[in-house]
Image (cartoon, rainbow, N blue to C red):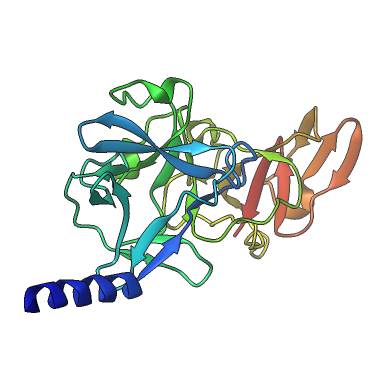
Length: 260
């Protein structure tokens, strides 16, 4: 009787600590922005997470702020979302040592960081779902991210608001490098873009970083960049319409350029 009471108390405490959350994808790419996540069977007591067009409100995870784990029922068992099989993001019996928390804006943090989540295709998952669907992946080392197949994303518990304009994001490896510049597709020091934030702009000077982005509204872009590419000297021509780039930032050939 005492054992039953103790077990019931433990179950009650656990249910109080657990909070139901739905996970979404936050991205500048309209292919992913606002997507939800679904688990697909990949083996015995093992599912991997894949992106779906819209999050099903009934598909929720239990977040325990005390243990810092995300779990859900799978049959008679409560399995966690784990990175023990990284880069795959698994839901199953694979042990993991990550701690999940959420930032004030809802972003999912892994051991304190929201970086390193990617949407990838052709990941060699056991059942081959990734040949047709994007899989959520977690790369601890950005240098290991496959080129041309992955896009950096943020996982969040807050449903993202619609993007202010229609955008398409190039694969991370498509970010070009121009003389006097360095590309920052993976670095944690790269400017972070999110629908709820504005682009970082600094004082005019030489070009030091480039972030690729292509708008669907522009069908043709030519760039004139004389001298040392100072912000006041950059002209862009889109569909035969010329404009002078504002101080501190410009769009060059479909690329968002930041002047430091």
